[in-house]
Image (cartoon, rainbow, N blue to C red):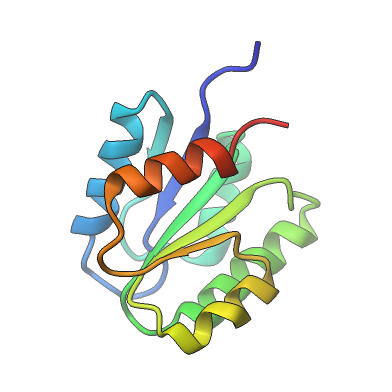
Length: 132
């Protein structure tokens, strides 16, 4: 049997607000998942490298800065370059509704906007980031 779901939670870019990321990390951990929180101000390269080193099943990006299109595109591109598209990318933060279809086209599996509950996130990660 496979082990627990492993998720990297990351704050890419210059945004310094990490409370939401920490709340989600704790909720996932409390639900029995292994969570690696990378801390503030991570580059897409650092995030992808951490996910590969940790053999992560998913990457959760917390983005409040407005740079979600650029940062998400770069993370997905780096995963593709490393032949690691089996790592599921999901995003939470202040994401305008108009950007959601574009993020999905880029390869982001799920977008959580303000008001998403930790229970909703935990349930989606269990269903959407499980082992193959």
